[in-house]
Length: 231
Image (cartoon, rainbow, N blue to C red; front, side, top):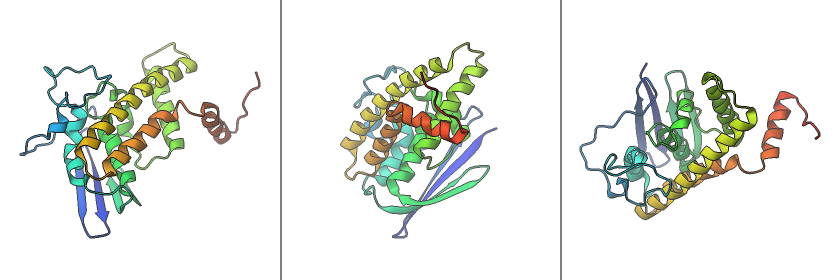
């Protein structure tokens, strides 16, 4: 069933911005109807990601840039630490947080990027069906591990847990490269820093799986009441 998720930003100066995201049955983001031409920075060849497998002949515009273009345009002059009340409406429930603009944008961009049809991000799309705004690193670790393991189970795969983690690491390396390239794209286009900082925060999440692995898993062991086995 098609779904709609809405992000609303209410700033202290009275300005409000609302972004309604409509998804198809596979939870892919439906194209927005727009009367204005796409910005130059959305062209696939504009600072194209170094690991991008797409060709301009088949995809003249970067699918992710195309989907966040209007948000970047709205917020390109907003400083990242500007406070806002961000309210997220999903079909099941409503989330709200008073936070820095970059934190709200990080959550919004993450949802859009996973559902835009980018070959390096499409594996994250199932998480969008169970979208958790403002997720912290521990929540992200748990959700991505669950995503990988459930995907392997449904595929009737014989892969081990170690295989799943190795595949997740490879995927996150591609995500890390993509995020870094996107920061360069937006740096050229934006005068302030809110969008760049939101994507920089996403890059930190991409690096999360490759940093302090033992500490990350130790957190999960604590939650499940387990001890690390001595080898």
